Image 1 (cartoon, rainbow, N blue to C red):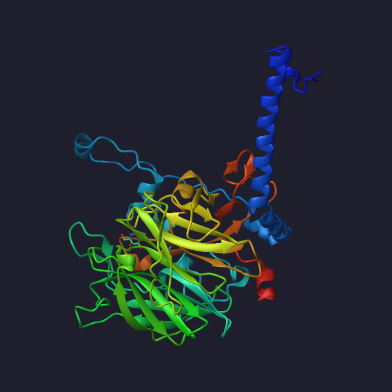
Image 2 (image 1 turned 180 degrees about the horizontal axis):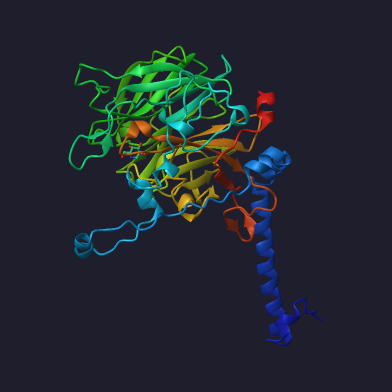
Length: 466
Ligand code: DGJ
């Protein structure tokens, strides 16, 4: 006699057909249970959740994960003369139009003026150590920091942070009528800090070449997104960067080296890695000391990733295509709980667009796309990555799960006045937050979230734990 474990089945059948129905349902449930168990065992979610739960118990981290809304009021539609109104159909401006319009009456919201600059020299009182994404950020000499498209290296030897980026303190112009806005190469700027807030200008550590027009670093070329890593075996600081000509057809990477984090860096050469065009790029040093290059290639349609040689001075023959056909750039790679994560942007020149978070168990792929990691602000703020573009994600090895998301708020009309958007990025999320992706009802990847804050600071425990 067979007992019907699934009474609802008997409504549709009786006798032996009821028995086979039960077997089918039981098998399906069994399979689903197996899949659920497999996903729990095989993916890092639980592990990360535990680490993160510990972190989240700190009230200051909870504060960083608070969702902060932003209410940006659109200006009233500007008046057009009756004649121009006849000529053009009326166009409703959006917040993105306002951001891109140099003469917008709400420009100060996106590009606050010098009066509101973050100045570590001033007795900032209660504002000390606070990040204000988008405000002008001054160095210890009182000048706006010039480190665009940059990255931060923590130098274990001096226990100091070094921020490297494009030094763009020159006039913006267009080399050709339809060419992108540009600033001549000046070099790579370097700033040092112990607290990640007070930055001392260490000067231009890789300078442009003034005379030799055939040199990669001749001022009329392009040098973007420099990143520096330290090679423990050779004791050298190695810089990789995007090298191009003014119309972005050289599409190469450049390599420079120094025995000191503050340079001067010695420029070695440029090449097309693995024989392919390479535009936006970054490098990533893994826990085992192997370093990788990740670059937008095949006309920005794919990303390529591959290990560097042991001395970090070249690529190897290994290369994998990832996010194929997804048209992503501005990659910023980081690791947490044994899983690799990456933030990328879309390809819209200097204009902001939607970020995506990706994750992979192996750095060479396959990579999964998790979704837009931006939280808070409003829909437009989230859709434009807080009006900025990713450049680097800075880890705090002693505070697992917390990172600083570093991005550039480009000002194409005046690139030297582009701003920095630094925001907390967490992996794991608090227990009551749902991860971005589901696999048969159970999460496959941890949640990657970047939280909008007008004003925020790192938890105090970070300073004590250093
Ligand atoms: C977007 C890239 O991410 C930037 O680094 C720069 O190359 C601009 N495009 C130029 O339009």
